[in-house]
Image (cartoon, rainbow, N blue to C red; front, side, top):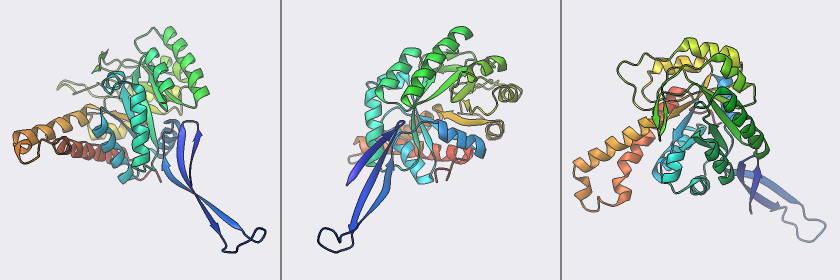
Length: 328
């Protein structure tokens, strides 16, 4: 017999195994019941990031764009026994026809693939309205990007979303200091966050904080000056044990990633690197004429090299972040 238990956005599939001692009759029969967890469903990011902070590693947030992306990331996380966060921008959500479609696809894949590692479904750079839609759709975590508002308005909107997330059992990420570059129309100049403003937002009760430290979405330019570890250390001192988030994980040198983790970063976002790997592998397949060989045009074959490239990228990042084996 299979049952679902639903609590604080953690849906778990359990198998109930009933055994008897072989005796027939009413009063003399004893029953042994074993409850065996079969698969994780969505969890919040709060617990996994607190464990990462304490364990001095980071959990990878990998943006998804379609079924192939989601399957590749989940399969890699399960194989490596790593917790993982599936990120969805508002643009990607629209591309996949809406947030409810995303939730349905992810929940279905977690069950069908029998995923047993912790998985959070997280809105990336959400507007206030987008956050409300994802809460309604069934996401387990959201990010409110209020960095473009005056700090007073950012605080008020964040407070309201915290209240709703507490009621729903969800985790909430906030941002101070716009991240550089562009992601699905969200443009930032690459500011360094004010530690005092970070403390103001952290004290509201958010679960994780993204602070701008010179990081950039997309490819880093040749004249990029690097991460401001002075800012990161000051933010860490201001917010205490709050798990910190590093956006724009693509292209940051490994030594900087490791230093950022040592200074309190517990979540690292990766998007562009998976896109570049997928595009390069797909281009190679087409330019080699593989799509013209037999049934090479079949999308299951056409998309396979890109799928494998995403898996390899995610594997490399999970190893770098130190999250391999941390689901056990």
